Image 1: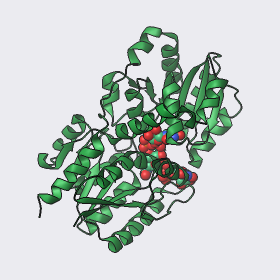
Image 2: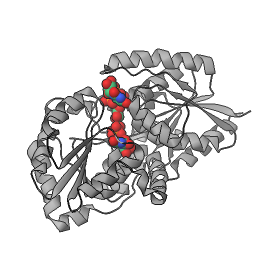
Image 3: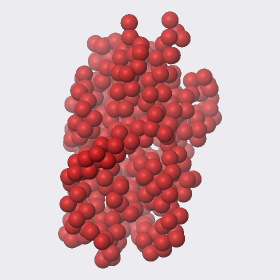
Image 4: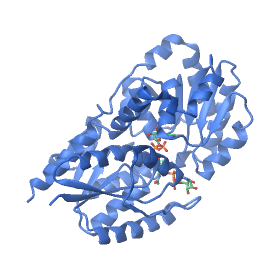
Amino acid sequence: MAKRIMVIFGTRPEAIKLFPVVTAIRQTNGVDPVVLVTGQHREMLDQVLDIAGLVPDHDLALMQPGQSLDEISARLLTGIGSVLDHEQPDMVIVQGDTATAMCGALAAYYRKLPVAHVEAGLRSGNIYHPWPEEVNRKIIGSMADLHFAPTETAAVALRREAVPDAHIFVTGNTVVDALHWVTDKLRHAPERANIIAPLEARFAGKRIIGVTTHRRENFGSGMADIADAIRTLAARDDVAIIFPVHLNPQVRSAIMPVLGDLANVALLEPLDYLNFTRLLQIADLMLTDSGGVQEEAPALGKPVLVMRDTTERPEGVAAGTARLVGTDKNRIVSEASALLDDAVAYAAMAQAHNPFGDGHSAGRIAVIISKWFTDRP
Ligand code: UD1
Ligand code: UDP
C-alpha cells in the first residue's frame, strides 16, 4: 500500500514552493500526498491554491488579522496535532521557516512521525535576522529525518551542525520548478497577467522598479525608511514603481500613507503568482526583503537590491545578481540610482544565474522519499 505523505503549509511562499512537491508525489510510485493547509495566510494562500489548481484535504483556516507569533503558534500546534491524530500519515513534509512549518514539524515529532524538511540548511547566522525564521528553521532541522538542502552551501551548514551526511540531499530549490511552471503558462497566454498588462502600457518608456516588503524585523523604522527611499526614487521622471503591498496591517500602515498619492507609483493588492512573475519579467530592478524574490530574480537575470542586513541566501549575492543594501534610506536610494544611471554596473548585475536549482527539484524529493520507505520495509 502506498505510504501517505502529509504535506503541511499555510503561507504564500510555502504554497509556491510545495505545490510542485505535491504534484511530484502524486506522480511517484509508492507514495500518495495528503494536503493540510493551516490557513496561516488566507487570501495570499488562496491565490496560489487557485492558480495551482490544488484542493487541500484539510484547511484549518487559522488566520486572524494582526496575529501575534504566540497566538498563531498555539493555534497551529493544536490544530495540526488533531489532524495528524485523525489521518495518521506515514510522514510529514514541511517547507522553510514559517510558524506553520515549525509547528507542523513539532506536532509530527510529538507523534514520532518522520519529518522531511524542504529547503533545509539556510542560515544567516543571526537569530534576529530573519526573525523568527532563523530559529524556526534550526528547530525544524533538529527534528527532521530527511533534509532537502537546495544548494551545497545549505548542505555544508547542516553538516556543520552534525546532521549525518546520509540524511542530507542536495535537490535544488523547488521555487525554480514553480517559476518554470508559471513562465511556461505566461509564454502561451501572456494576457493572463491581466493586472500587469495595463501597467506596462501606462508606464511605457519608464524604467520599472518592482518592490515588495514584509519582514517582521523591518517593522517600524526600517519600513518607514523603505517607504521614504521609494518616495525619493519616485521623484525621478524616468522611473515607475510597481509595488504589490503585503496584507499585514503593519506593512500597509507604513507604506500606504507615504506612497499612496504618487502618479508613477502603483500600489497594488498582493499579486497572484502569474502577475507577480510577469512583474519580475518586465522589471528593470527589484527592491525587496523577500526570501523567494531573492531566488527568482537571479533566475530571470533581474538585479535585486535586498533591503536586509543579512541573508540566509548568499548564492544570489555570490552570483552577482543580488546585493545587500539594508534599510537605510540613503543607501537604498544611492544603490538603486547607481544601477539606473550606470549601464556598465547594471549589465554586470543583470546576468541570468540559477544557483538555486534546475526546475527538477520536486521530482527528486518525491523519489528520495519513496526510496526511503522501500529501504525500510
Ligand atoms: C509569514 C512568515 C514569514 C514569511 C511570510 C510570507 C512566520 C513567523 N512568518 O510572515 O516567514 O516570509 O509569512 O509572506 O510564519 N494577512 C492577511 N491575509 C493574508 C496574509 C496575511 O490579511 O493572506 C495579514 C493578517 O493580518 C495576518 C498578518 O498579515 O495576521 C501577518 O501574517 P503572518 O503569517 O502572521 O506573518 P507574515 O509576516 O506574513
Ligand atoms: N509573490 C507573489 N505575489 C506578490 C508578491 C510575491 O506571488 O504580490 C511571490 C514571489 O514570487 C515569491 C513569494 O511570493 O515566490 C515570496 O513570498 P513572500 O515575499 O511573502 O515570503 P518570503 O519568500 O520572504 O518568505
